[in-house]
Amino acid sequence: MDINILGIESSCDDTSAAIVSNGILLSNVIASQAVHSAYGGVVPELASRAHQQNIIPVVDQAIKQSGLTKDQISAVAFTRGPGLLGSLLVGVSFAKGFALAGNIPMIEINHLQGHVLSQFVHEKDKVAKNPDFPFLTLLVSGGHTQIIKVNDYFDMEIIGSTIDDAAGEAFDKCAKVMGLGYPGGPVIDKHAHQGNHDAFKFAKPHIKDLDFSFSGLKTSFLYTLRDEMKTNPNFIDENIDDLCASLQYTIISILIDKLKKAVKQTGIKQITIGGGVAANSELRDTLTETAKRCGWEVFIPERKYTTDNAAMIAGAGYFKYQKGEFATMDLAPDARLKF
Ligand code: KG4
Ligand code: ZN
Image (cartoon, rainbow, N blue to C red; front, side):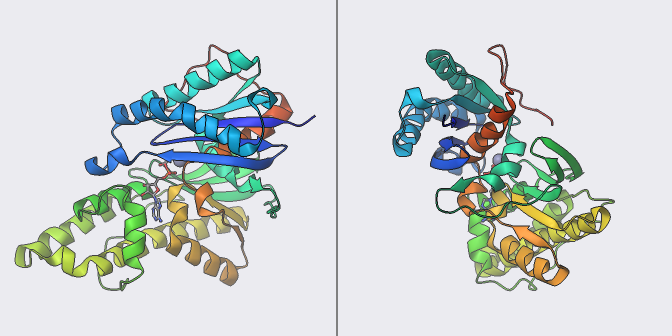
């Protein structure tokens, strides 16, 4: 019998639903919330309201696009956390209602494990090679920056983590001070293509072990703008491409340096990336070049599976379904869920 998993993702500002059938992705619908761009960041109350408006049409679309019917769904997998509580509540409540109505089991998924496991989600006719366990994942998003040692599907150890801002936050906060809107990563990525990454030097932190820090870089960026604008009020506009290129180059070097250290420390040379910042073109290119030079094997998912999506939740749900690990109706979302 086919195992058809409906995945629901609502941890931040994307409402997404996907269907995975026997491990193959049939549909993945994402409604992104444009409402936050005017505020320079995600406004939690607006996010949960938008999830409420989006969730039914998004699930409806995902089921329609999969070619299945509602009664063919075997289980519903959902993001339990970490994330914004009000946003998570919408997805968790919807999953409970859907499971109850269809008399099917529910499967809870940790959002970060979902990002890691996005590597195993493949579309029909696009089946690609999977990494072998153990492998390392560089998880870089708006809320997290971690190096994870993945021993098995749900056996993961965080071996390095940010002690302050996440990498995506560094992109977003620096974009905000340059007046580039939210999210900042994609806009900085675009400008950086035309810029010179040696034009400006920003502070690189010296943090021990495999941990990261981005707050010093953010301050150094801010001080450069403040000092330069004293003599030239048009400094940002006139140097936007070089500023973006230099900032992006510094963030990517911090990430790659730690990854090299992690490979040295663990001896593991299979690397995957996940999280929104993994969509960054310079990170993808640098990782590919470093892999060639250092003899690593890197697995880089398509961009649409690195940012928040339900395909990764449905895919992770498929693995838990096979193990018979189901959630109970009294389960609550957990904004700070650990693994
Ligand atoms: O994984 P994600 O969609 O949501 C979280 O769980 O945080 O990641 C969103 C983050 C934002 O900080 C956004 O600026 C960043 O990913 N991002 C990028 C790019 N695309 C998205 N950062 C750098 N370059 C990009 N191309
Ligand atoms: Zn995420």
